[in-house]
Each structure stands twice: as C-alpha cells, then as structure tokens.
Image (cartoon, rainbow, N blue to C red; front, side):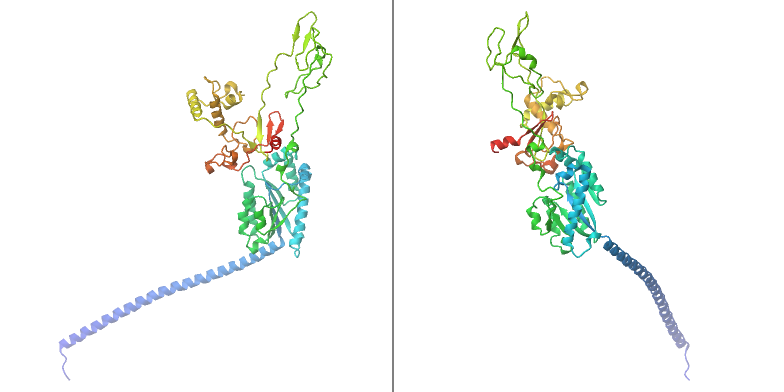
Length: 499
C-alpha cells in the first residue's frame, strides 16, 4: 500500500473545504429563494382572498341594484305622466278666460286638460292613458303680460292676472303658472331646461311643447329630429300658424283653439286699446253781454262746456253790430265804463308731457338730435367748475320737486345753452331705467333702450352695451300717452299718409 504524504492530505483537505463552502453557498441561496417564494405566495393568497371578498360584495350590490332597477321600472310603469311645456311669451289664453279671473283660470286649465287627453287618445290608442298624470308648466313674465293685457283692455287691472294664475294652479295640483320675471329669454331658458329634463325620463310618456313661434328653439329641437327613441315623444303645438322652421322639423304639430287665442295681441290697436277721437273744435261765435252768465270755465284740454247758442240780435253798447269773426264781448255797467273782458289773451296752456310706446306696449324713447361735441365738453367743464352735476329734472323738465334739498346743481350762470341741454339729455338717457321697456312714467328721463338701434341701426358696443338686452326692440312708436291719461294713436297719421 502506497504511503500518503502529509502534503497530499493537506491538498485533499483544502478540496473538501472548498466543496463545503460551495455547498453552504448553494444551500443559503436555496433558503433565500424559498423565503422569497413563500412571501410572494402569501401575498398572492391574500390578494385572492381579497378578490373573493370583493366579488361577494359586488355580487351582493349587483343583486340589490337589479332589485332596485326592477322596482324603479315597476314604479315608472305604474306612474306614467305627460308634460305640457308652454312659453307664455307666445301663447296667450283666450280673452274670455283672462277676463273671468279666478274662474277663468280654472276653466282654461280644465279645457286644456280635455284637449290634451283627446290628442293622447289619438297618439297612444293602445295605452290606458286615463291612468297617466298630466303636468302643465306655463312660463311667463307675469308683470309684463299683465301690462300688455291691461293696455289692450283685456284685463281691467294688472292684478287680475294674478287671480287668473291662482285659478289655473288650483284647478289641478300638477298645473303651474310660473312667473319668470323680467329679462330677455328667461321663459325660453326655463322651457328648454324642462324639455331636456323630461325627454330622458322613462316615466314621461309624451311631451307637448310650444308654441311654434320662437325660432330660438329650433337648434334644440334639431338635435332630436333624427332620434327615433325621442322624437316620438314630442308633439309641438301652435297658437298661430307655425313658423316654417318648425314645420320642416317633421314633428307632429297640433293646436288648441278653444284654449289659446289664434291671433297675436299686436293686431289689436286703435280704439281697442282706449284711444278715442278728439271732438271737433267749436266754431267761433259772438256773444252779447246779457249771455255772459252762460259761459263756463274751460277744461284743462281747452274744451268749453255748456256752450251758448250764437245770437243774431247781439249789439254793442253804442248800438253797433259786431262782426261774426269777432270774439270780443263788451259789457256796459250801470254808470260805469265799458269793459272789454275778452281782448286779453289767455295764457298759453302748458305742454303736457307724454311717453311713447310701440305696438307691443313697450316704451320708446323719442329720438334726440345729435349731441354737439363742443357742447358736451362745455357741459362737463361747467359741471366741474360748479363742483357737482346738473339736476336733470330742473334743467330738462323745468322743475325739481326736491327744491333746495336737491343734491345736484340748479342755478347756473350763464344758463345752459340749447346745445348743452341736448348734451344733458344724452347724458340722462345713458342711465338705464330700472323699469326698462315697461316704464310708463312720462317724467322718466332715463334711457329705456339702446340709442343706436333707430332705423334698424346696429350698436357698435355689442355685448358691452348697457342696453344690450334691447338691441332687438321695436323703436317705432304707435301710441302716445299723455300725463293726464289721454292717448293719441300715431298709426292713424301713418295710414292717412300712406306710410
């Protein structure tokens, strides 16, 4: 047997050490890998458990949602309704309903309900529409509508419209007469918002929308023209012949002549709105001294009541006979001089102030002459030197109720020139009247519409104009209303002159 040297044992031992070290490294790596895998496994198990819990929760919520949806569908099926959306700017109830006040409102509501039911029977002949609720929304500027109806003598006073609206609302718990207040297109916005809301409600079976007069609704209705699921729910109604744009939409159009008037209010002018022809002026005549007691005081308008008959035997104190064209009457007093009581000229009557209105009974400002640039500058300089602005009433009307307590300037030397007064008029018209186009005060000096729209003019200020809401206003006056309540129809002169 060969002998193994120490060096060989040592080399062999070193090899064993290296092998042990490699084995330790490998085992350590295996243990670390196992630990990593165990951690990943634990995380996956936790996620799986979480997903199981979430799935159970979602399944439970899905079951509850399906149950709620089913209940909602059943509720909708059991409570269907029809809605009628009316823009009161274009639709006016018949005069007899307005005049009947509270009872008229109830009668109009009942007649409208009857007419809607008749049309529903034709549209949904296979449905039980008697179980459908009917909702009616009538949107209007109540104060403005009352003014228009009162000016046409349809209402005796503006407060009568409130009685009609109350009767309309009380006739049915789902009927509403909604006052939208002043402002351009406020009724339009309400009607459009209500239409959008109702179109997507499954319980809303049908919508009556109108009247077909305001072309501002065309863009909205155009969106639903080709939507077969929606356009079947819409029926338009017209009070007057529908505008061509509404006819082209292809929706069904109906009318309710027994409920709404079929002609616009603007066609009722002249004597229908309280204008009466002025009586002819009395012919001149001569009067004797004995008949002086028959003459009465003249009225504010200059008419003479109890006019005596002319006498053919009238003589003067000296026996002469006056001519028929003479208005002088002399009286001979006992032992006194002859006194002529008619030679003095009567003071000129004070010009009555007035306000102008268009065919829609909206205020129209009388057009002012062009303001002179030098006069405008001069007016500003005078106001600056006085330390305060001029009183519009004092300098434009001639009087100011506040007197010495007025905070604005009255007396100024030298007085304002005619050109400066025109400049002051323009400055006063630049103040927007709080009543806007519905102002009836003949003493109102503020502006009621944009001054740039006369003769179809266009305002260069556009949306920045303080009067931008009046850019579409009609500024052709048709009626002059004086401060004493008398009226003058301005259309009569235009008809006579062929304009």
